[in-house]
Length: 67
Image (cartoon, rainbow, N blue to C red; front, side):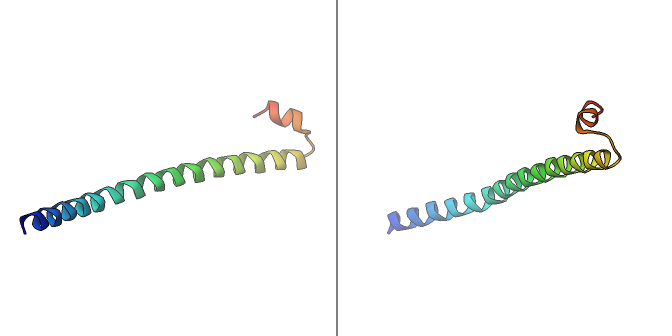
């Protein structure tokens, strides 16, 4: 009986530890996703800027040197 109580206590402790760790993991994944989104937006904005310069009559080499 004592052994089953001990196993139950250990299982409950592991469950609590898992519940405490899960938000941290989710937060890390969310932060990584946010960083990827920011980098993607920055790349998209610079790409759009280059497209506008090209449409204005500049070629890509001068647009790249002006970045």
